[in-house]
Image 1 (cartoon, one colour):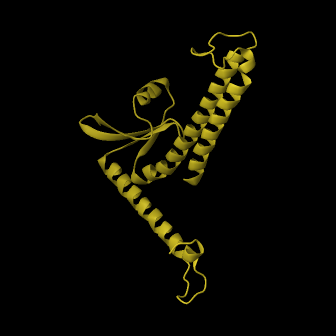
Image 2 (image 1 turned 180 degrees about the vertical axis):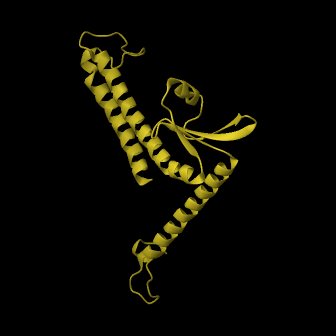
Length: 183
């Protein structure tokens, strides 16, 4: 979770820095820094308008790569639970299958009726490039396994908190509260 927050922070810093560099570096080209409309939208022969669009595409690439990595990590965490719960994995290996899967919401459950029965579809076009299909029983097992995994994570966090607690005797001379000027 911390690395995800750090990567988002880094992407924000990169975006701000590139906009600042683009704004400062484009003043010699007649004031334009992007190929879009607005201030200085006329293009100059120095190529400053393409410089702005390159920065935009670079920022888009960084943000897209960050989102793609987040999607892959999410799929990597979910798919073992799907396998253990009884979902069947089917590859998305033909154009017809890609078209069908294109209508499903990726990395979430989609309920579809087939021959009068509800099936749960979980499309993953990012990691395994497959779709998981299961019935109501498999879906219920998945929900239970996810709940159990969450409880295990909470228990682990509590154990870590317990290990990190400092027990100081009441007559200790070290007083962290007073050291910071707090009453």
